[in-house]
Structures are given as C-alpha cells and as structure tokens.
Length: 149
Image (tube, rainbow, N blue to C red; front, side):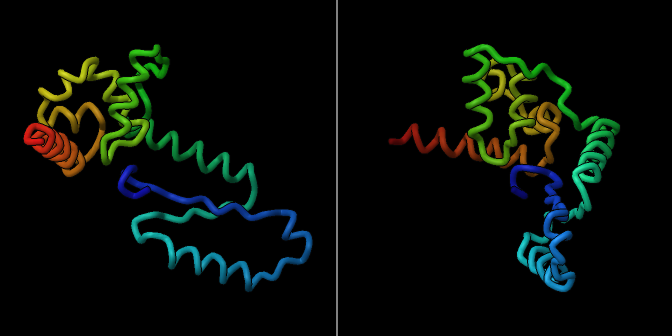
C-alpha cells in the first residue's frame, strides 16, 4: 500500500454495536496499539467514532487533495481501447489507479509514454521523482531483458 500511494492511511471506525454491549475499553486501547505497531510506519492511522465522522473525515481529506491539485482532474470514462491502455499503465510498478488515469489522459498512446522523460512522467502522473525514475528503469530493464531472449 505504501508503494502505490504517496500518503496512505487506514481509518479505524468504532463499532457502536460493541460499545452498547459493554465492550471493554482497555481491550480497545490494546487493539489500537497493536494495529499501530504492526502497520508500516509510513501508513497513518486515523480513528473515527461513527459513520458520519468517517464521512466528514474523508470529505476533508478530499478537499485538501483538491486544494493541492492532487485530485482526479481527468475524464474517467473509458472505451475498450482506453481500458487496455489503463490496464497497461496500472500494471506498472509504483502506479496507483489514479496515476494510471492521469497517464491514460496525458499519454494517449504507449509510444508517447515510452518517449517521455522522468520529469514528464512525474508531472503527468502527479508522482514523485523517485517513482517516475523507478517506472522508467523497470521499462528499460524489461525491454533489454526481452531483447536478449
């Protein structure tokens, strides 16, 4: 999860049914501690008390992403040929579905994608320089490997 997304997070929502059954407060604290220890250190844990709280949390995260210009700003409709293009981009390492949509919109053909630089890939996919370079290295290593076999 941390390889696909820039800032992944997990939302833990309190179950009201268990709260009404007299669920032990200390076991909940233990569960939260266990989850935070076992989860990868780069993944943030957000806690929610209800469905409404979770919805408002997701809405505020969406608004922050929109202000930063990191939301999906491309058409999401696909015909069969664009679906194949999306599947190709989504199969690459370090590419999330959102990034694949951005690639599909900014690189209408695979040829355009192969001719682009790491900086072009970074700008088109809204990804880090590290991920853009890793994608290019993957493509060149796979192509070189296939050329010699």
